[in-house]
Image 1 (spheres, rainbow, N blue to C red):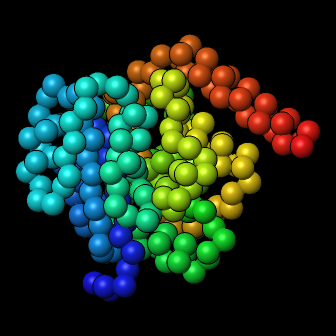
Image 2: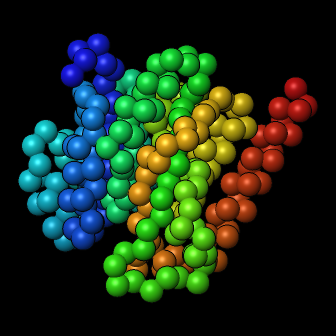
Length: 231
């Protein structure tokens, strides 16, 4: 380990995550980068999430009453000790060199605020492919505009703000859109950093709620841009 490496804080929001959480945490532990701080925010789970999280050494386990992933991530950011922040959803996996590739790019490019990467989508064994998932997405590598693929400077949250918990769906997309509207520089590295799991639970979103939230934060984006243009 290079003692000069900056600390990266990894925030994992988890709710009733017992089925996939062990694999997600292990994909963080197997990173070929140190030092890491792993913060797991348990969002009011009623299953074995706490037991699984506490079975790992050196994980900061924080319990909160069920409040949603936005508040879980925000609470994680507030206690994070690293100058760099990464997020991992409870059912996703990282490739072993995810953080090392991204931190090296940020260290070499001080003008870049955050880095994303490529993703490989895979279908959980025994699960029928949902109608919205095109077969080509399972066969190709695509850019991942997702928090699980993100490594960002912590200072960006002071500039952009935290995740908006008023959005039940899409608060992550809303935050990324705010960074674009603020004209922050980002980069998508060409390597795969994320293995995105498709399973039963992430097929069951309320489509109408999602549409409402998306329309709302898109309107907010238009208002921000109009305000900038009028300055």
